[in-house]
Image (cartoon, rainbow, N blue to C red; front, side, top):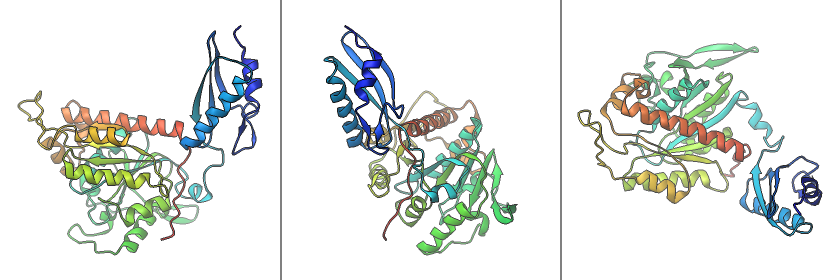
Length: 366
């Protein structure tokens, strides 16, 4: 005899949601019940994304149903955020920003800022409202990459308070320390000064409503990275690397930093830049001058997504220096690879939001 859904719900009413202290049926957390001759399957929504918590819920559901039905039971666990999961500080800062994405690299020279600028323009081209903070305090490059090096941000009055108004280019709102310093002026700041400048870009700037705010971080892992995760709830991180071993070793450390228990920022994936060289006269050829599939192998090793493999093409550099990101070149090989990367980052962000609760602000003792 095939059991009915009512019997399944009756059995599951004995299972309690540990955070809300009510049974999962009363809370409408049971869905997609399918009863067949030899199997029973259903989906249970949980609020805690931790693996041990999901496993505990799965076991509790199996035990509850087995008391009534001796069939194979398949429990699908889906994570949803608690209604009040955000801390007050997270709602006060950037309240109109849906996704804050950190773009990081373990070492310099891997093209992180190039990837960030093209990702920003690509997301804007998909119809999203996009902002970009150039948090590479010591080597700001976004003013040049967006052809706005000579512009200066203005101010805007919002409810009686003056805020910095970002510069707009190619559909992206941009703020960089480079707007406030001479192009030939070296920025020699200690860590606390750099962290304070980053905080001002969040708190003293009017960003309005944004679907994405991208943060172009300095290379490595340091004060700026810690200040970021302590100031705003980072939705996810994208780590950029080139295929050679030394870059991958540093990228691995970058991924490891975001995965630290006291930081715990979801890593959306890895972008492998300069993945191969394709000369203009031989567009079908690929030369792996920095090594083959290094980023793909690292992504597999760390169990994160490979978000894109971007070719080494001279025009990408030239496009950046001309202030017109290469993704705008429409039909070129590099534009195609960059657009595919944008779609993968967008997809990874949506998957992250569907399966994990909001990221909490990091609280560090030192």
